[in-house]
Amino acid sequence: MPLLYSPGVRLTKSTDIALRIAMRLAVLDDTEDAPTTREVASAIQVPYSHAAKVVSRLQHLGAVEARRGRGGGLTLTTVGRTGSLGRLVRALEGTDDVVGCEDDPPCPLRAGCRLRGALRAAQEAFFATLDPLSIEDLIGTPTGPLLLSLTSHPAD
Image 1 (cartoon, rainbow, N blue to C red):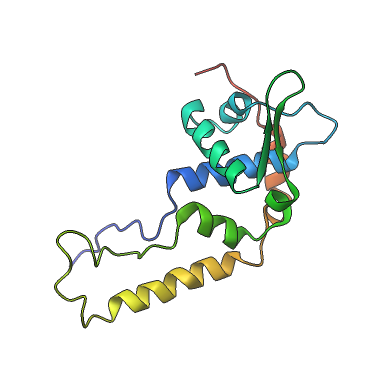
Image 2: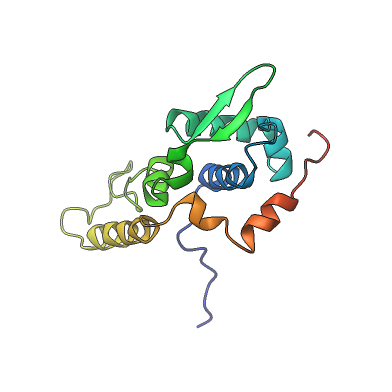
């Protein structure tokens, strides 16, 4: 029997964008003007509207500071730079069940199924792997220089 393609566990698009935004901000020099959300979105090639929502969420989590007006822009906070990557991904993804045991209609096996617990343990192992890492850990060579080479593209 041929194997069917399965994407496996996958982060949401907003978490992916959030991590890319944080990594992009982490490599920028403090002497440079802080980039706008539009500039970062363009550099990492994501729609501005998505980036704006993600920046708002990162602000709420204390990972990014956004200033408006002249001299404004985005900066990565100390929490965003050195905080636990696992904590950040948990906050962005949530820790809901991987499977929809309580969906409507609920799974008829939920009262005695061991799959839910096994998947919860696997999910926590995934997060635990990220716990000792930070955004700062992710921007070494070759990633950092690649992030620095990204330039803004014409507005979308």
